Amino acid sequence: MPAAAVAPDPVYDSAKQAEHLQTAAAMESSEVALVQGVWQQVKPKKVHHGVEVLVKLFDKYPETKDRFPRLDVSSPEAMRGNVRMQAHAGRVVSQLGALIEDLDNMSLVNETIYLLGENHNKRKVQAKDFEKFNTVFIEYLKETLGGAFAADAEAALSKFMGIFASKMAENLDQ
Image (cartoon, rainbow, N blue to C red; front, side):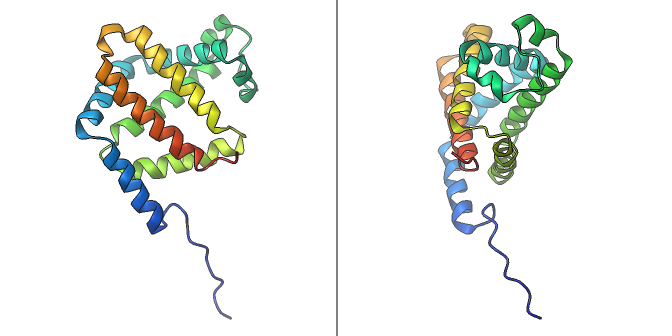
């Protein structure tokens, strides 16, 4: 009996890989260094920063609360004091940090984003949700890091977050 034909895996499709390599080229080494420098400022308090970004997200875009039925999003105080919120926020920021730390290995970054996209697609997350998160994340860093978040670092991080959101959107049902 002949073996069943296997559909090509979109992650390893050669056209996708070429596109991913172009994405890698879109980030200059100086931009990567700036993004990684920002991450070094966030990393020591990643759970705190993650919670505060989510508090800000839910305040600015209250409709996003519906995406988190298992979290207590009733008030900023409840969110800040909730261990489940802290765990989720820590995972979100840690995953972003892992992507940032691996920017020299875009194949790994793209595979990780692909898996994240699949995971978020199961939860019916849409591309616009990532755009909202990106906006709030950049605003939060500007407010929190102040002068340590220079315009060139902001531009580089915005570029990275845009690439991230775009790659995530490829794996979401819209």
